[in-house]
Image (cartoon, rainbow, N blue to C red; front, side, top):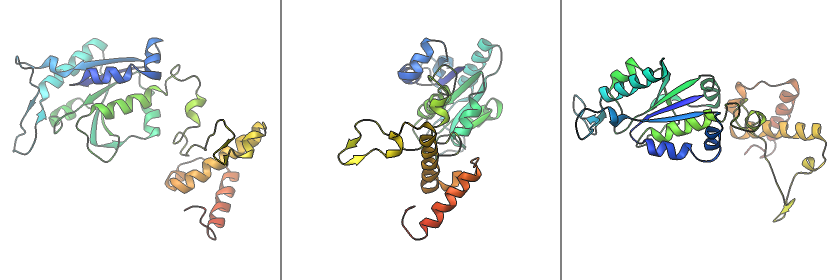
Amino acid sequence: MRIDFLTLFPEMCETVMSESIIGRAQKKGAVEIYCHQIRDFAFDKHKRVDDSPFGGGMGMLLKAEPIALCIDDLINELGEKPHLIYMSPQGKTLTQQKVKELADYPNLALLCGHYEGIDERIIDKYVDEEVSIGDYVLTGGELPALVLADSVCRMIDGVLSDAECFEEESHFNYLLEYPQYTRPYDWRGMKVPDELLTGHHENVKKWRRKQSLFRTLKKRPDMLENAELTDEDKTFLKEIIEDAKNSEILK
C-alpha cells in the first residue's frame, strides 16, 4: 500500500511515520509513505497558501489553487487518482470497520487542512470522503491523518508479524479485547487469573471470549448490536445481565 500526505508540515508526518513498526514496514517494502508540501505549489515568492474567507469571519482558509496543483501533480505521478480523504471534524468518525475498508485501497491520499479549513471547491472537485477521528477540533489535519495512516498500515500484510495481532484486538469484530497479564504471577497482591495458568488452550480461549463479551457489555454495550454472537455467547450475556440485577457487576 502507498499513502500520500498532502500537508503544510511534511517533516512532522515523515518523522512519525518513520518510527517504530511503520518505519520498519517501510524499510522492508510492506508500505510506502510519501509527503507532499502544499507550499511548493504556491505562486508568490512568500509561498503563501492562505487567504481570508469571502463574507468575513475569523481566521484564514487554505486557497484552492495550491492544493489543486498539489493533487494534480500527485495524479500525474501515479497515473491515476488515488482515493482522496480530507481529514475534517465534519467527516464520518473513524472506526475499525472503516480502517478495514480503507486498507483494501492500493493508494490513499490524505489531505491535511489548517487554519479554518480549505476552500470548499477542493472538496467538491477532488475529495472522495471526509474522515474525523472524533468530535473535537485540532489546529491542523496532520495528527488525524497520522492516526488514520497508522491504523490502516498495521492492517497490511507484512506490517505486523501475524494477522492474529489485530484480529483479536478491540473493535475488530465489534468486541473489546480481553484482559492480558505478564510476569510476575503475583504483583502487589494481585494475581493472574488461574484459567490462564492451566496450559489448556481451549479453556483459555473460552475464558478470553467470555471476558471479551463481559468487557464489551460493561464498557461499550452499543457494539454488541453488530457483533456476530453464537448461541453460547448469547446465553453467557443473558446470565451476566440476570446476575447484574442483584449486584453491581456491570457498574
